[in-house]
Length: 427
Image (cartoon, rainbow, N blue to C red; front, side):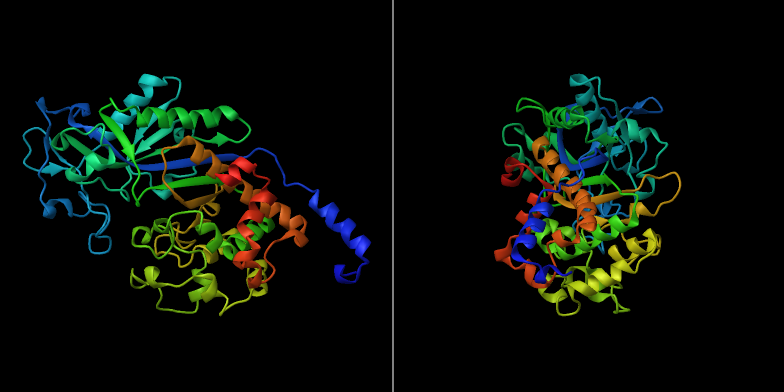
């Protein structure tokens, strides 16, 4: 019998019963990727030797050299003019050919971590491409990785004193480079793992008398990987929740971490693209298509209802199809979807030998362990909330687009359903 025709007493009792049911608190695996610009004094570099001849720095690289693809800049300058290699070069031995950094900046970070927290294992890594992530049987999962991040660029010498005013006395002696810290498998049931994040960041940050330090620009992100539910029904419920609340969730972050911003170009695309532009055969042929796409709630509700989104997702039978819809359009090299969406579902589809995870990509980078841990709690909570709403559909917050009006404060209601503490909600 529909709740509308129940007596007020029975309706009240049912509502009270539903309100006392909590989300699943079972621990899950997760991981974090912490992107930042790493600045350092030239004296911190160990350039090594080539054929017995010391390698040397080349500080005055021409723009022509910096934009060489893929020797220096790993993104095509014609498509990503804001991702040009912007650090010093290295001349190896007697070679007349200049090279980009290899692993010299990463070695500084590794050394600083080991000197303060030798119990935390680390490993220097090159570019950590998507095909390397989420593998089950690799040593990456037992050590913190220090890879280069080509989507984060160093800054010119004149800018460094503005970011690290108490450390950079002579800018000509300092350089900067885009790096990230990638965690091994962490576990929400072990509080010590939260402490590990704090230690890692403390070592990277140092103090004002250190000759190194990280800082965060618009290009830096905080990515959280959450162990994916086994049940595809839960994954589909999560997909609906994220689609409907995409704009609300994006308001938690600066505009530079939202689809349509120049700094987010092809790094943070909307998960709504399929539902908004899936019938356009020409979409995606130009890189600026992603910047121009209007996936706001106001635009989306003109094309599709909340019920239609539910229905389309409900018809999906396989995780590959779910990934293709949530991470549309798929690039040529990966038919299962575009990993550079706000929420990346592609890691559900890599097959045997890979862990299945949902990647939350939209948060801005940070050097605060408190911020990292609060965001992890929220991301894990969203995944748990999907299971909760699947069991109790009456509690699902968005039944029509009108429910997303500002006065309904859906974001706050989500946090309450996740059962975040008042401190976390305030944060």
